Length: 217
Ligand SMILES: [Zn+2]
Image (cartoon, rainbow, N blue to C red):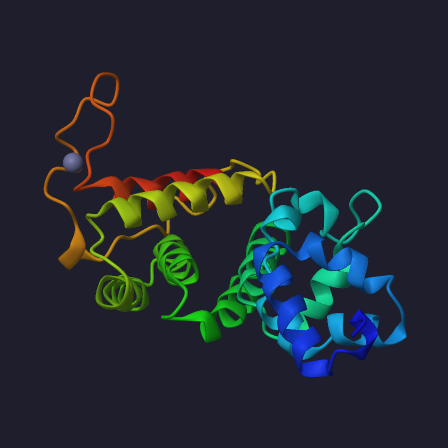
């Protein structure tokens, strides 16, 4: 049996596994013929394929930047509800267009299943001073993923700061006047540390992540 003889569902399964590992592994299937190409662009593949390699370099999928190498494929994934595409497009809308409503709406279907979208949305609501919504989302993260005081929260918080930074934000601190952290979740030790000698502790890490994202914008 040659590859073209395999039934669609088997080929789809193979491609889905490749795409879920890294979307770049789909490239040979795109050029392998019409049938293969059609399957790569199917909803099942686009919805779950791993876009990490594309999104570590946002300039490749931001409209108006460079040659837009990855934007057409990125948009196809976005239309199919790919979680990563929604998260990164939300960052673009918020950072480059100031469109918080659009960005937060885009991430909403990812909540609470995607921890990063949940935590990022909570942080952006802090910037807007909406402590009710931020508090609710922090609790969603806590209930579905891990405590705010956990290695997982710390790792995701670090990733959000890095990924916001990868969009070349203005670093204007424009939301420092509206910034509010949910009072019920305010860590007692937040101002007890000497930042010069004491790297932010676990307990108040997410609080300071929120401040760092605020400073980035
Ligand atoms: Zn602390």
